[in-house]
Image (cartoon, rainbow, N blue to C red):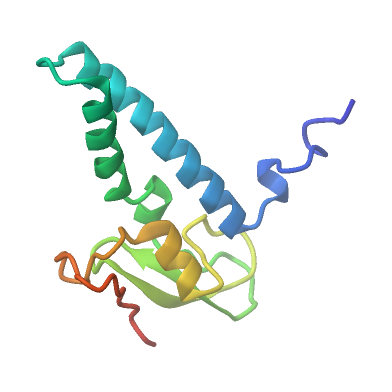
Length: 139
């Protein structure tokens, strides 16, 4: 039997991107379950399919909690170019990561940052874009 610290896929063995993806999936699944339970209890005659569709649409527009975290350089002295999701500007922005500690709002590429944190088709001013483009702030 593997010890918990040696098991594959534990929090300590995941990269920030892997942790972000796992957190996002779990957060959205739990939020969907809670939403369906609460809305279902107070339902005004809507079918469960309608409730599920509404809850799913709402969840797709809500970034995971890790995207609310600030950029954290960490105490180490490396100088790694990374990106974090700035929930105020609604953009993925560059920052310098020191190489250790920090938090999960730390992505190697803008593409990963956008995929994890940016609601689909949303522009930096909060308006929906018809072509699905996303804006990434340059350094």
